Image 1 (cartoon, each protein chain N blue to C red):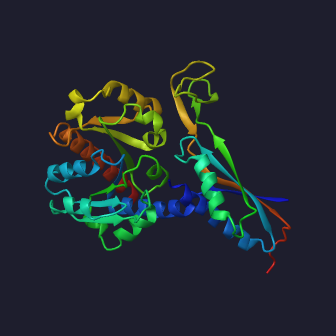
Image 2 (cartoon, rainbow over the protein chains, first blue to last red):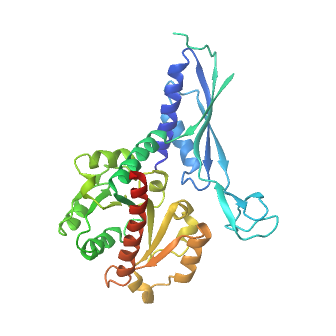
Length: 120
Length: 226
């Protein structure tokens, strides 16, 4: 439900980048979304498409990288993907593990064509 | 094709305001807590119980968010504490900018505990940092015990889960032990309290939790001032 706001924040970031790179045509914006971010990728894609249709961003594609929840084992140091809420280390079985990532909501990169540095 | 690395938070403007608020709260020694739940889980009732139960001398203030109406603020004002309604007009969550605007004419030096009642929703509020010291999630026994597994984000980000409406346990097929285990599966180490707002069960433990959390926060505040 809040994906419209998230899509809008992505577009704002794209807009401010565009101002730095005059003459550029934005092609792709990549975001990283953790499974604990509380953002539904499909809804975000839908909102992004709806917000960009018939605008200067019509050619801009949204790419979503989904990130699983990762923990690190406090015994052997292995970083592993947590599946089905099983937090035990998948290498040594240790129960004490620390949350490392999985709640990302980040802008990764922007791809553009005809890029000319703004020297003005 | 040129690729420009951005590597920043999508909600960086919200996060920037939240960071400013968090610093202000710490400088003034104001413990800010963000209460989140589905609609109808008992956030406003818990706040009513809180305002009638806090010890004398506690200076509490409430910001209560809803899509429409001033109803919650009206319910909460009768206890004599400052209460402000934030009407989002359709938005399903509060954001840091709304908190900043509604705090503009309040003196944080005269607020020990700021309770924010978020819009009833288990999904969207979890993405928005309001500058709070902790998020608290409420889960009522008339909901399913699998809520923590269905909405892991908010249970993961909350420090405490308050299980509400425990007086209804004999009448509903809610498995309390299972619900608590599910909350711990998503967030090992999450604290759990059980309350009944209508009967008053567990309210003393909740107020004790607030007091302990406030003491802890005040120690951090003293360090920040030193």
